[in-house]
Image 1 (cartoon, rainbow, N blue to C red):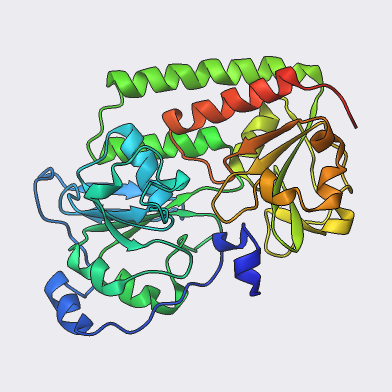
Image 2 (tube, rainbow, N blue to C red):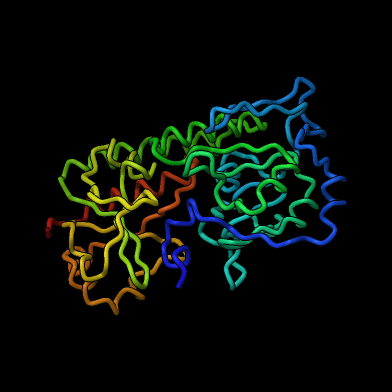
Length: 341
């Protein structure tokens, strides 16, 4: 099994493969392959600009009307009201049964061109045909666009300017605020009732979690794979960083891997860190409790034996609507838990 396929977080910096595309040259020419990417369409005549997570100011002649984004990025923008302008997505979007992947949030995926649906997929021809005016993705590792294949990024970047949204090593609330600014620049109304209500819910949930954290319940954020158990680092993961700021007692792994974000443990050493509650990565590629039941070392963990395992959105949706339930769920898990370590 390849490293990238067995490590649930490695996709944050993994290299994606992209093959050759027939007729791509003509499509590049039609889309304007010089990389200037000055959007045209019903935007403001005053132009548009946004300074992204790299500190780079991206400017266009008008507000972009045709956006292609990483699925999780698009889902957050959707929550803020940017919907029709997103014409394509790449990343986990549709499950085998046709339903939206958890990363897609509340988006209507039937209206989107799915340029890639999994790690290692990015259809360059489909991307070109969307006539993109702006490409947006999350950035977990400095300078790397999440799910944009390194092998073909030069060709991809010729089609449209790019915006990278910093999504690691800073508090989740800061990331959400940046997404709100981006959405507003693209035309979202941050005073709209749905957005305002979501923000109010988020703030109430944060206070609930802050209060629950005073119970001194230790939480471990983890991911399960066939060969390894991953303990996530709250100093790198933006959501965990925010939970920690609210007072949650989170396990901090001592030997974070060179990949960043987590410590890799063999299943024999899964009990290295004591925890009262385990929040488990709920993404498609991570093993869930039913699948982990065959692991003796998993079943012997105190939190597991006590039934104190909750889901964890290891890749949070950076909007108030997306993040509020995460705070509520963690608060509930801590409120119900007893010390078992």
